[in-house]
Length: 148
Image 1 (cartoon, rainbow, N blue to C red):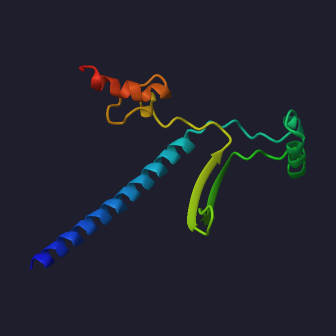
Image 2: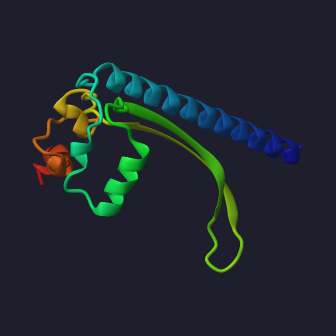
Image 3: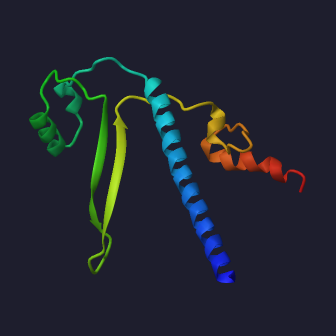
């Protein structure tokens, strides 16, 4: 009897943990998607620029040779790239320790928009405004210790 009760409790805890993990992953994806949409919608565009060989001046000679080979004069500049990667990585230094990986990356060549107010740099719990990113922790938590 007590064994069955313990088994039911363990199963219930496992189900709760699975539901929480699923909900957390769903929430993370939704928040990331919303943030990317805000950034993309507010991206500052600089118009359609075209490549010019004069832009290579000052770069090392091997870099100049590469770009002169692969780029054509007047070619439109790429504004953004969405990369998806998947494969296997060997994490072992001395032996085989292959692990699967997947990565998604968005690269833009133009300045992204802001994701919110200056307060978004700080602790979301206290919403304390910061003046610089490096002072965020100090400014967010100092009011908590001001009475000490």
